[in-house]
Length: 300
Image (cartoon, rainbow, N blue to C red):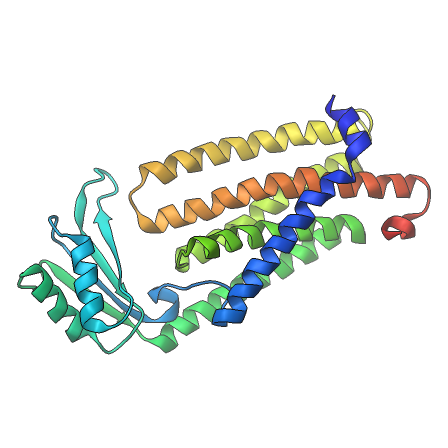
């Protein structure tokens, strides 16, 4: 059944990835035009102040409102939970400005009616230049990883079309989760950037599995049967990973881990489309042209 579907409609499979590419470029491009950044950054990447209050009974909404009224700037407040017991341990306050630590401390004391000391309160400030350095270094790491991945793929296949398909798939696996993160208004932290590094590796795994099965091996039936066989293996990997991460996302109380898990889950869902819709269609198209002895006509 799936072999017949691929044989008849392989070109139509390319429509969804093309629409996703347009969607991703529009969302990220619009965000960049408005802010000058590809995504919204938290204090670890932008600079600012992070304060932690180790008190369980805190009205987080009231505290946030009081601090915003006092400081005249946006305040992010979230509960701090124990990972093992999932019990509330306190509140984390983040402000994307520097030099106002005393005002924040005074505002917290006034809002909570609480005397702060080293046992129930901690505060740290990340300078804007330091945060910017972290950001630039991490972006360089992602870019270098992507370039090295592209070089390795090009050496492995020594052919433009399969190599370009694998690289484009990895690019989409980064672009679409980033677009959704922007739409959700989530501020990325250092761990979030690390998640995108993990995505590059996982994306290439499934793409190379499909490419090798379809283009380099001739056993296992015709090209359509080989695609289905590769999809069974790849989708099993993706499903098991996705289920484990989804469970972990809902179980963990760590904001940092939740962000990482969410990004990777979004990338896994995107990878299903880019690998088994886009690359399957490209490989079938390419194989047909190659069999006709007309590789140059692939784009024709």
